[in-house]
Length: 56
Image (cartoon, rainbow, N blue to C red; front, side):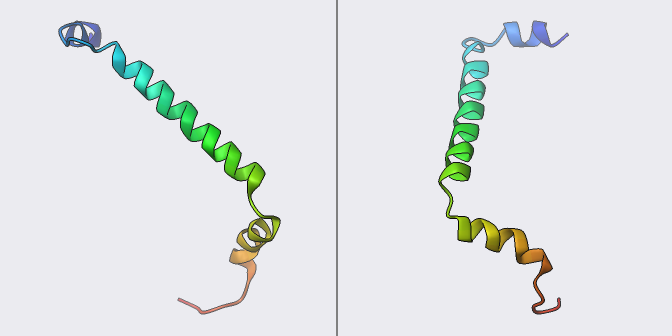
């Protein structure tokens, strides 16, 4: 059904390539952040919900 709509758009084959590139770039950057993050920052963020603080 959608194939008929999409076939009328010129250059539509570029969009899947752009989407895949954004997807891969996001997860590469996320992986880089995870492996390079400071251990103190990770521990602080994981304990944040458990710390007593201001009540909302």
